Amino acid sequence: MTVVDNETAGAGERLAHGEARYRAGAYAEAAEIFEKLCNDKPGFPTPIRMLGLCRLRLGEPEKALVLLEQAHTLAPFDPYARLHYGIGLHAVGRHREAAALFAGCRADLPGDPAPYLNLASALLALGDVSAAVDAARRARRRAPKLAQAHYVLGQALLAAGRLDTAAVSFSDCLRLAPGFADAWVNLGVALYRKSDIEGAKTAMRRALVAAPGHRAATANLGVFLRLTGEVEAGETLLRDTIARDPTAVEARLNLAADLLQEERPAEALALLQRGATAGGAAGRLSLGAAALAGPVADRPSRRGAGDHRHVGQHAGRVRAAPALAAGLAGRGRGRAR
View 1 (cartoon, rainbow, N blue to C red):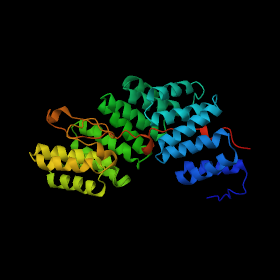
View 2 (cartoon, helix red, strand yellow):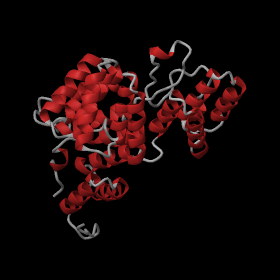
View 3 (spheres, rainbow, N blue to C red):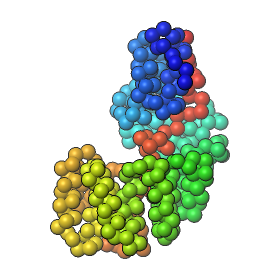
View 4 (cartoon, helix red, strand yellow):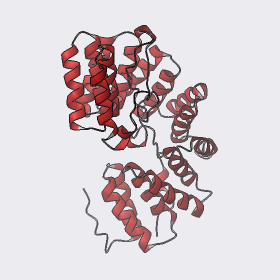
């Protein structure tokens, strides 16, 4: 790795170094570089924009949006400033505004899949599944060797209930990126909804190899173990997950649902009450909580109306990277002098 002295190097060299660290996933280190550049060259949009993307990757969407909006204001005709501002809006739930920006970037970035990938994610959030499938297909057409393009298409197809083609898309993604944990999770969800529970269990285990402790994979695997007769193993997995992370909403809900199914209501209520005092997302738990933040809840009809297990389709939002496509050439524009 090239070492750059940020005190003596020129602004262009420091910007390039920051971009390299960003692409390598060293977001905190990249943020420090961009923040110094912002202080040294106030009003220059590129380091502000890149700092905003770092904040987004570091799980600070509100701070990110302020920076990305500032960069867009400074460079309103830069398509990547618009694209990244849209990503910031999408991250805080302003999906309609984000979709409009992504759609507006398509003509300016005809060969880049990023506008279509992000547009597909925003359309899914808005419930326009058909348009999301179309946008995701256009992204894949532009970048057939990009794992993320196959992943987002799989998400859209899964939302449309097209399970066979969704499974194919996730499998294509995993051939390109075998360590993509979220793709394993969603492949498992597709297989589960196709009644292939053994295949779904295998997919969740592969997700946990790629990302130990993955919350959706753990919660789903706990359900699948119980459904295939490994009741004690499933309960142990879910309890261990909750013990390690009291804010693991999906695992807590799934275990509570199983306890209710087994006519153990007092234990289920106690579990949910403890979750309500755990803080974070778990603090929003209640016995009637059917629409929690986090993975999308799927209630398979074959289990009957009384089944409230949450089999999570991992939506791959900003934290998990799949919904954040920064663009193929966005970091090459407007370099500092």
